[in-house]
Length: 197
Image 1 (cartoon, helix red, strand yellow):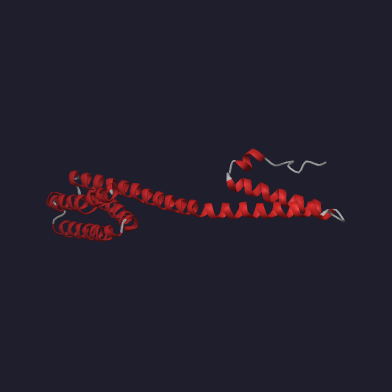
Image 2 (cartoon, rainbow, N blue to C red):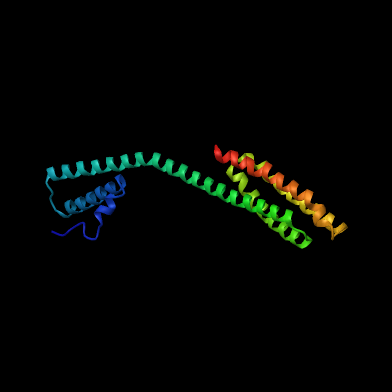
C-alpha cells in the first residue's frame, strides 16, 4: 500500500484551520473515489460509504466557506484601518517637516535660504495635501487651504524680495509666522482631532 500523504506536510496544512482540514478531506475524497473507480465491481456498501463521505466533505467545505465570509470582511476592515494609519503617520511626518521648515525659515537671514525653505515647504505641503483627503474627507478643506497659504507665502516673498532684496528676510518674518500659525491651525490641530477619534 502506497502512502497517499507522501510529500505532504500535514501539520502545516492543518495549521490553516478549517480550510486546511477541508483541503485534506477533499484530497482524501479524491483518493477514495480513485480507488473505488479502479475496482471493476465495487460493493454497494462501499459505494454508499463513499457517497456519504463525499457528501460530508462537501458539507465541511461549505461550512468553511460560510465561516470564511465574516473573517474576510474583518480582514478587509483591518486592511482599511492599516491603510488609514499609514496615511496618518505619513501625514504627521510631512506636517512635522513643514513645521520644521517654517521654523528654519523664520530663523533665515538671507533670501537664498528662504527660497530653499520655501521649496521644501512647497514639496511637503503638496505631499500633505495629497494625503489629507485620504485620511478624512473633512481634511480636504485643510489641504486646499494649506496649498493656498504656501502659494501666497511664496508670492509675497517674491514681491518683497523683488522690491528690496537686502531687507527681504526681515520684512518676510511676519509672513513666515503667519504660515507657521496657519499650518498649525488648519492642518496639525484638525489632523490630531481626527486621529484621536
